[in-house]
Image (cartoon, rainbow, N blue to C red; front, side, top):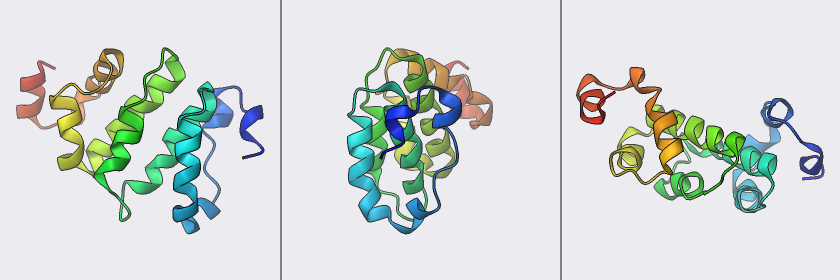
Length: 130
């Protein structure tokens, strides 16, 4: 928490998360919500990145909504949302694909996410005209 006000670029923001995060997921979730709603570009980005801790065995579909509901004009926030959703597609396809198919994301994020369409099944790429 004390470090985040000093993070002012993507390179320091995207450093690997402290190992203690994995051991304290229950305590981390409220912090992620605070970071995502902070209004600070790199704090939001850090919160989205930390949300990836919940894409495996601790996954709940509502965690996708934390990132997908963010609306920002900031390039580095939107890039992290797109990256997060691409990772979520790989790990939690059934829960994530409706965000893409139903176009629940901001248009820029949707387009950026679709650029990674090479990893998608052919039938999905065809439906999206990728």
